[in-house]
Length: 303
Image 1 (cartoon, rainbow, N blue to C red):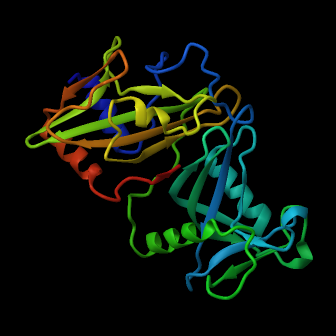
Image 2 (image 1 turned 90 degrees about the vertical axis):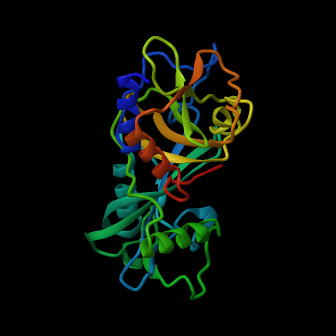
């Protein structure tokens, strides 16, 4: 394994930002790549807990759901980083300032939206009252998750439970988006195959060896499609090691560093040209990969 590939592996395992190559390993001839505000939107959502494990909620002002309650959330705006968008939405809808602690989960619906759910903590501000109602929200309040509350949608209940569980015992290291530009929505894939006494990873064989990169396109119902179909068999498990996003013109794409794991004596057949398996020989790197593969050490990616 080349030193450059080892360095890339170490950086990705650290959750750091790694610049994307000039040429992607998997991209259709006419990719119609996903770009923010052109054909996909990014949504940021914040879950804030107080000392009583109550969750911060906002009351909707929109006509179609006026009076119902939801977590502070909204679409990312032009030029914003994901963290900036989160802090803006929380302040606009609840009046409070916040500091992101970690991503809890990334959810995706193909060409419709990608939602980034953060756990964050209050750092100041004044809780919005009904006297301060505006187009963003009618008011905000802390909810004990037990008292009756008319919710806009119950999809937030598993997310709140995830936040409470993470607050009690972290299921993965803190992961926050790293500033690094990408023109499109791209997957960088760290695919690992293990068998007794041996470990191999999938690499790109083009020019200098690196982890495979895939452009997500409009034709896919899920951005996970390349991960599940790059090889003959899908991985046993997968999750996110890191998120890269910068914001701004021609840099408002996204890169998800995804780890997928295979187990078995036979290497999965590669269905894409230019990719091949290579053995991991460095014991320190093997140990790091083994730690990353342990259950619940990766950021969940829900499709």
